[in-house]
Amino acid sequence: MMDLKKEIVEVLSRFYPREDIEKTVRKPDSPQHGDYTSTIAFQVAKREKKDPRGIAEELAEKIKPSKIIQKVEAVNGYLNFFLNWREVSKFVFSEISSKKGRYGEVNLGKGEKVLLEHTSANPNKPLHVGILRNTCLGDALARIMKFTGYNVTVVNYIDDSGVQMAYNVLAHTELGFPLQSKKKEKFDHYCGKVYSQVFKIVEEKPEFEKKLREIIAKIEEGNNTYSKFARELAEKVVKSQLETCWRIKVYFNYLIWETDILKSGLWEKAFNELKETGKIIKKNEGEKKGCWILDLSKDPFFSKQKDAEEVLVRSDGTSVYVAKDIAFAMWKLNCLREKHKFFIKEFCLQPNKVSLFTTVPRETGKYLWSDADYTIAVIGSEQKHAQRVVKTSLNLIGCKKKYLHYSYGLLTLSRETVEELLENEQKERKDLKKAVKMSGRKGLVVNADDVLDELKKLTRIETRRRNRDEPDEWVEEKAEEVAVGALKFELLKTSREKWVVFDIKKALELKENTGPYIQYTYARANRIIEKAKEQEIEESNEFEELKDMEKEVLKKLYEFPSIVKKAGETLSPQVICQFLTELSLTFNKFYQNIPVLKAEKGGNKRFRLELVKGVKQVLENGLNLLGIPAPEKM
Image (cartoon, rainbow, N blue to C red; front, side, top):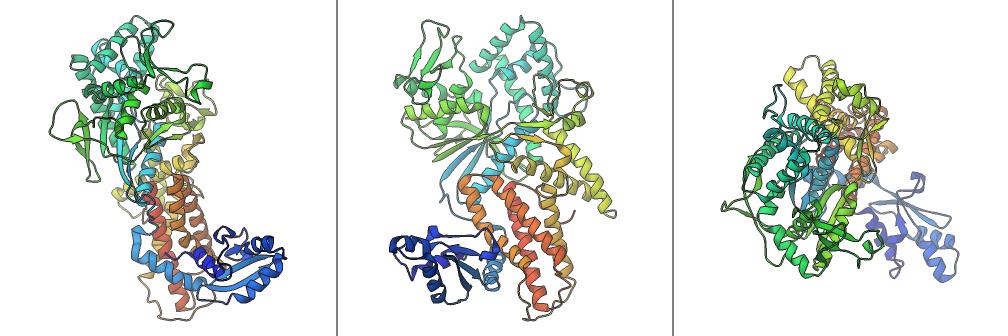
């Protein structure tokens, strides 16, 4: 792709070859000051003790118009470059036409191997809309990194040995809860309700606490009735959770089970290597007596904390969450002295025709090990402390590879959304605030499936109103695509560090900065192209001068590869969201004010059609990077 900034830098370098010119060239704040502006005259004037205005005026006279540079103006020491966008369009249209779905690709990663972990939900309940922010961020991140030259493997870490899993095992083995719901509902939804009910029972009857701890230990120990039952239960829940992921076009390469980390001996290997650093010790007194703790008192950050001793193994011998996460991180980055491998088998064939593999506790003849150069864990900001402990542990054993905690802010729900979606007994709650934080224990949860179903229901009504002659199957398909687009865009458009308040009705609004607005713009562009096929377009080279709105659309099309690069460098899907919104706004303004198919001159019509085709392709590529469907008709 032609680099316009580079072209200007090269022109200026002919006059000042020793200057650092690139940093003087940027896009101006106002289009009145050209397409690019340079402060080179100020840089030279400072060194030569001259007036920058004179230097700029002299340069403007020396730089002659070229194929790309239409004219150069000197204004108060600034050099303003106006480009020949008619010529630039030839390069842009050619790139888009030849690369199609690959337009915008850049090779930042150069094949670097990345192991990306996301979703990682507890396997005892459905994915709620808060977890879906993790899922959507992780999926968009994987798509962007693949598009920018990284070799990405996506894993879903299944925490099946924790206390939440134990509650559900207790429910079915000790409290008489049936294994199947009497209602017609997804298995993960049923398990979520069981968990909430059993949590309340244990709260009211503390005598079950001892049994709960016993079950946790049995699950971690393995090869017993409790652990086998827990795995069967968890696998059924995960299959239901995956159905939700597939609805929003999210797929994985591997499921890695926490119990397999424990049973495979990975934790023991990691534990022993950490002990050799002298930083892990067993406490013989105090409130942590009998616990194995990680001494972080010499670390610059943790030394300033109130407690610099991190418990890894409790006094009852069970390991805490962060301990298993340390072992997993060491495996992901291949930091163990002895290469560790998991036994694996195929779990299922996903709707995208890619096999999903899972770790298993016994020999299968197939193995999984990691040789990643870089690992990313998409985990909420509430785990910032634990993730810092993981990174510090890697440093203790001399692992220098990249470990990134991809942190994100909590998702809450608008009160209106909660009242719309929660079951009747929850709607009258007086403790609901303007922004509601979800809690599985309290049963105050809005499941991702329910949000998608409600979005689809609302979308179906509007889709049918706009398309009265289409069959029901088509309406269902389009309603699902718009529902997915509305939800994913809402979860991705905000900076990941910020909290998000999700409102189901605002997500569906057909206005700027929503998924349906981008999808509608894509469908509009497609409709223009389809109509053009029914016309004979005059072969004419007769053009009017490019209008400002045409230039603005063209500039956006040219800009897309640099936007992709920025998203890849900053690991920010939000950058893509913002660009797609700006492109859609620019295109819709253009379409409303400038005729395309009714253009008077054939040359103008052909040029504007190329603009429309370019917009359609770039919107499609951008939506693909977010994992959002691009419906050709809405």
